[in-house]
Image (tube, rainbow, N blue to C red; front, side, top):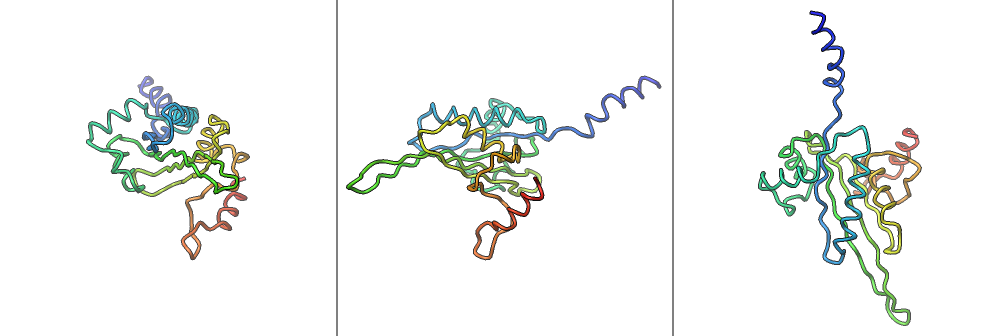
Length: 194
């Protein structure tokens, strides 16, 4: 009888307060971004999320294999409801998905130089409800620090280290009358959070 009591004392907290499971789906990317930079940003983002003790991250290989076994493709992933379908197939509580792109703009003459920037657009969805929990879109010049960029986006998506949030962070919350994000609501929530 005493052994059963010790069993419950030791394992009940881990059963009741289990960390939520999270999967990061492979990000889509355009043809302009090299595989090297894509892998650098994706792996840095994943490692930063994995370091968060609040979540149990599903491994990359397990995620890719489960997606293939379920017969799902990247083209089916358009909304948070689609992400919930992926999440159910993976057996996780939350899904992170997104894309990375290299955008290039050439300014007209007489200057005529090219401006390139990397854009990372990342979403976090709740698998049970299919609702979008957070969305971060951020861009940097092609001369910037990609590692710091990817880490900052992961921190913003998980609402960690509030000091790194720039003004460009997008908040998936109440919208204003024009369908845009309500900046006043975002600022009020950030003040309450901090």
